Length: 233
Image (cartoon, rainbow, N blue to C red; front, side):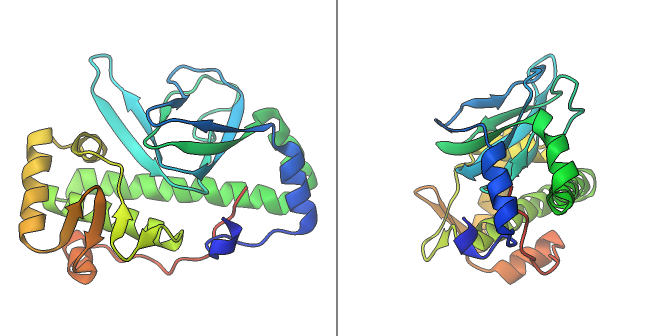
């Protein structure tokens, strides 16, 4: 992952500390629960490979997806560390994760303040993504919402070297898109067909290809800041 150039460099002592802090590495299948709503699990995770999403559900089963998680994303700081998790995290694909005990986080801040800053940056970046999703749900039309989600995920994956000449393997189904954007499944289906008919994207055999990224960005009112190397814990 570090070889992709998507992540900022760490010193040898920081990498040694991260490796020492690491509790174990796990591999799980698609549809696995990393965190369940109401868990009091005292662990943090780095997603090393695969896709996942963070969500909450209402009592009647309706679900809101807050964010889709890609390799390098840090999981578990979106709640008070001494409280139960108010949200869940589920994998979309086969995934590999590093597992860290949350009580070692204090050692990280105390002995490696630069890594502490990295953790703060990762948390702030996640909040920025959630803010963008809130803007979509609150103010963008259905067409703009889906265009925004597509280009945002595509750009994130492209940075990680996950986009190939035939596009990006996209493990989301229409229900995931609807749950992330506050749309009905019927509305999501019609809007996807409309964007496809406009020639903005193709989705074949699970691979997404943006045919006209500039037009998609204009439609979504999406103006990404220059991508900088991200911390990797």
